[in-house]
Length: 193
Image 1 (tube, rainbow, N blue to C red):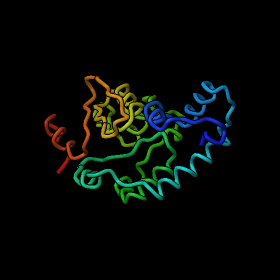
Image 2: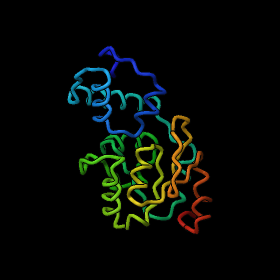
Image 3: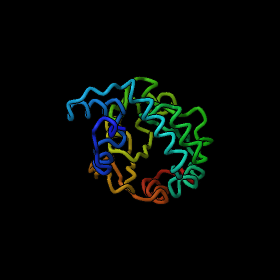
Image 4: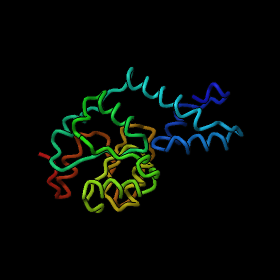
């Protein structure tokens, strides 16, 4: 996306610095660091088209995701910095959209994005659940920080080697979705069958 503007970014650097970060913040950072004035309104459709193309050609479900979602016995939702249409696309491509009917919450809904905890409070309120009774499973440091600041118990999925560790009493790091039922049961939470 930035290459056409003479900016080459290392893929590993992109994952480390920008995974889970709002697109507009990424553009602001690139503008500042490279002394350019890339327009958000111009770049966003290019980015969205490229993400959709990659989803269509390469997106696969994470191993164990469908089994985990089938086993969960409490209401669940998806909270994302991306637009609802992106969530619908990715969940539809992986066959998991049916687990979240009308329970997709986007930073665009309230114009606040992770790591701002407002998005977590918004989702909890919409689900009619006290935020301190929520369990957050997230694969980005921005999402994990959002959950921490909202007072949630955070299960930080670190199968991606680019994820930086987060050491915090509210954070449990794990690398395989199949680990979650046992981790939850060890806390005394009966949330899976």
